[in-house]
Length: 293
Image 1 (cartoon, rainbow, N blue to C red):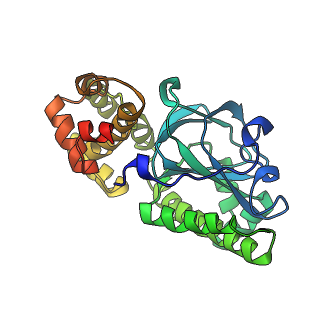
Image 2: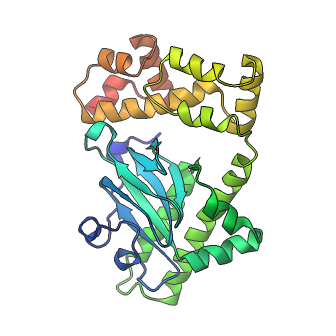
């Protein structure tokens, strides 16, 4: 994975923070009367708020904690989430420590979203609108780079208020929405009893004892649980838990002076050597080397 300190910096358009509205067409590209638009974010927004339209947030760099409908989730690089008019959310830095978080918000007019969803199913708009369960999905690095390059190119136009830029923005927003719908359709098939487990173990601080407690809450044997988890999440439970821990470890290495041993203990890895080897396998560099870059 590319080192976050060498990634491109995404600008944000307009004085979004002082406007008190991140997902606001008044401060987005291509222009405020478009059916879709976007803006860049590089700060937390710790104000619990809602929207009249739809907002799809993608984490481009580092991580951020989103509180959505009362539930907190650490969103790491590549994660995305769709928020509708019936939802309430906010964004905060993990542990209150400013980091290198960057994201992009894709904005969809409510009427445009309904039109797109009606193409899939007449009742899909109502189902997604009324679904209060937070739904997260992950985009590949190649997809993110492709779409953000198009969005950046829109802003190179001296006048981005053109049919061409409107078409480009609609194309990006529609294509990413299709990726959300693919994941949503798969996620909607996840057994109801399994969804809270998936949500609760997406926690970088989780201990082996806490993980075992979460497993024991389920009406499955361990072998049944591992098969179901792999079927719906396309990875093992251990891989899923370790991904959250490693992304947060990267955050701690970038923004704190905690030692490798302290981070090992903080994130409940079994030993510093295990953390060292796992980090290197996942990111291609050791924790110590990553901190020096």
